Image (cartoon, rainbow, N blue to C red; front, side):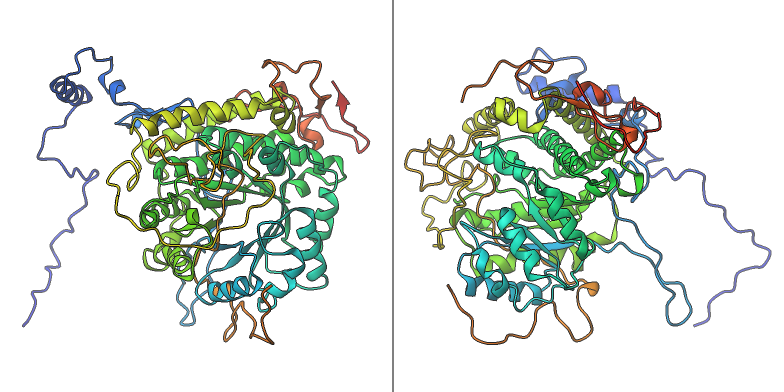
Length: 613
């Protein structure tokens, strides 16, 4: 069959300047939409309607932050620019798309993002079980490990055994276990090359938030100098899931993370590191929830806020990007009908990836019941595999960028969190705010509001308050270890705890009337999760797991709040940001995350020292 050839005299058809998909329909106006909404609400029995009417449909997503049912271009007209991925203010992500090498046939290859690091958590005290689980994870798509060491986790003296099969130059390792675990790891890897992306996991302020006991930050720089011998091995994790698990909303989570990060910057610079070196020692850990858009906006806002802190503190622009580790929320994980948790963690993982997290951990669906089995770990791995390998989610940077709703929510969260952050700084910094009870009371208020919504089913929980399976027989799991910082008193430093079923004195669950099995302190027993193959994580013919060799062995009242520091507040230091030292008092920070910087531009001499106020 022959095809007609185009007439050489035919002029090409030019595309229209604007593609109007609804050109055949009349253009609706905002007022028309409001009239329709008002009509529906009046039919539902609502007579006294606010002006504008959409205010009746506004819903709260975090402390001081609510969302409307409709957003337009006018809502983002006055918002600050978001920049480009990999560049300040890093709203669109800290990762950069690097040019791809030319293809073998000489054609230009397409450059795509590398996706995120798939991080699996291991906390089983049984050394043999943990070693087997690590091997299974690394052979099936996991790209880095998260090890919980010490009481309630893997024994510190067994660290070498559980990592015996791991190629540490291919698989990064992040620790959670304090100075003892960090010391053991540094001794183990002395003289060896490590894969970039690991972390010693020191978080003394997180321990203080969970236990209420003051912590010493004086040894952080020493660990940082030893970690520097291994390239990109970082020292500190700012774990905001501590306050999240205690009942905080995204606003408290962001503000506490910023204040803790600033406290670590101060400690590291006081101990001799430059502000740039100190900033590169930090990694931030946030919770990812089933509230998809709030999670996306939280991660985007966190990067903007940290860039603002870095700008005010004198951190060079090229190292101000926040390294983020997103973990699916333990608060949303239910013991009843645990199979629904697979759906929750899938949404949370999707949101973490879209939000630009550098590393993502998916909790197994049975984490609230105890130590997960191999099936639960496999489902957690494959959740990320589906999103990255089949849905190619990691190939797109900031797909939510430009959305009127997401951009507006990102800005609202950033401003609310900045207000909370500066309040913490006025109280003397994060450690002082923990000691005074300021953080505890704020988180308790947020949790009380959440509890009321749960008790009245304003916030439905599928399988618990909605569509419960009353004849359900729960799967049996081995009990998870309990680190000492998660004692019966719960999160002493930051807020209330919903005790597990093993706490005989715990309060009843507000929805089910049973003693709650949702853990609200520090970090509940999260176990291995994550998954995704990454070409850079293995050599041809090699796996991050070494061949098995040899047998396996198992083995007080709060003081009145004040807008300004009181006589009991520790001495405050004010450092000019241009000196490369972060400011200490609340008045030294910009008024908002987007206001012009008030930092001094004076040149600091090498002998410049902080002044005491």
